[in-house]
Amino acid sequence: MDLNELQGERHSACIVIEGEQIGRVFYLMKQSNVIGRSEDADIRLDSATVSRRHAVISMDQGNRILLRDLGSSNGTYVNAKRITEAELGEGAIFSIGIYKLKLATLSRHDTAFFQHLRDGAERDGLTGAYNKGFITGLLEMMIASSRYRERLIAVAMVDIDRFKDINDTYGHVAGDTVLKNIAALLGTSLRSADRFGRFGGEEFLIVFDGTAISDARVISERIRRVVMDHSTEYDGKSIAVTISIGIASSEEGQVVDAESLIRMADEKLYTAKRSGRNRTVS
Image (cartoon, rainbow, N blue to C red; front, side, top):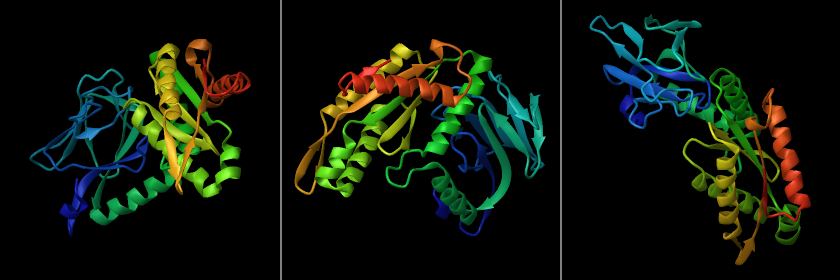
């Protein structure tokens, strides 16, 4: 919603305090607000751990705020207890899938502040992709959730080939431009449910939730070809780059944590590099 609509007013809102959209504010501007991953949900939480229509938060005639589960697969929790319906007071915390939300009364200025914190906590300053801490934390939450739901998790480690040569030949500003363009290509080539972040230097980590390794490979190969066919224009020069990709999945054995899955993907990436670069190994 437009923050200008809230000038001089305070409204009940739900703040995401844990999960992928941490710091996101959803104002309760309707009598009943559906929470779910459906595109038409009033509070959209885009995760496979959330049902399409998971729960509804509403205000009754006595101005009480009520939370009601809509028969979700993973349940709705208030104070760690699964509920069918519960009344929420100011500051109440409830769980929907991998998300935790807090009920609060906020103004437009509060929202701007939370947005500032959110951007700083989530995003890499250069590329606008998720930063390493955030994408790793998100993967950790997905793995923890998959243990109970028997859901597949796959990751792809993406590395720009010979990136040092780009910096040495064209300069670091040109290298930064290449990084931003690769991040933009990832953003437009992935599915809406996929997430990616800058893992470090010239590396990006892609997280595929509920995806078999064969499907992760198809998507990764598509990305590799898109990058190969694209050139970065800088200072009148056209800079062509390629990427190497290593893919790992929970299908390959017991995944203890995010670190172990990332390590597996990194080993596959190393194989891709040794095999001549510009290829995907799974």
